[in-house]
Image 1 (cartoon, rainbow, N blue to C red):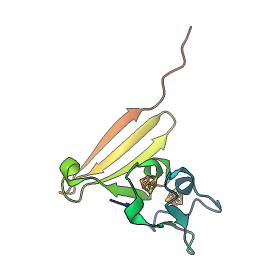
Image 2 (tube, rainbow, N blue to C red):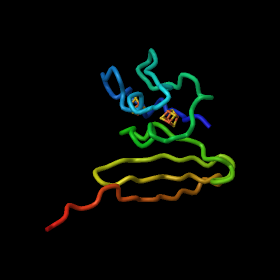
Image 3 (cartoon, helix red, strand yellow):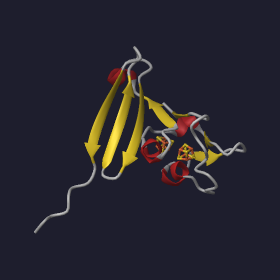
Image 4 (cartoon, helix red, strand yellow):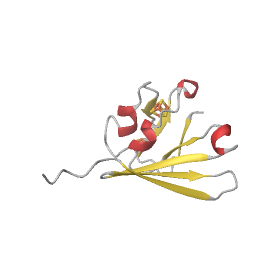
Length: 110
Ligand code: SF4
Ligand code: SF4
């Protein structure tokens, strides 16, 4: 399933010539369109790695989960902050669930 871009939330990462999502996509599938918004070059080539979703600072990207995992129409967004990655699951019935993952270990005190 390709990622979906919310054109109302995406601001093209401002004036960046290479937005954060574009920079991290391993398949070079994302680009800035003429309206300064993220767009997907060839959606069929997206392999759902979620790298762009974790990288977007405005939560403008989301992906559909496979039916076997989330049910038909379940979507996933993410928000990455210092040391914490939050996943926001929206289920087919519209209810939501958040999963918070610590991404860095504290510095050792020794
Ligand atoms: S990282 Fe987010 S805000 Fe920036 S261009 Fe990509 S989708 Fe838009
Ligand atoms: S999910 Fe992965 S492959 Fe698909 S557009 Fe985002 S970064 Fe590229």
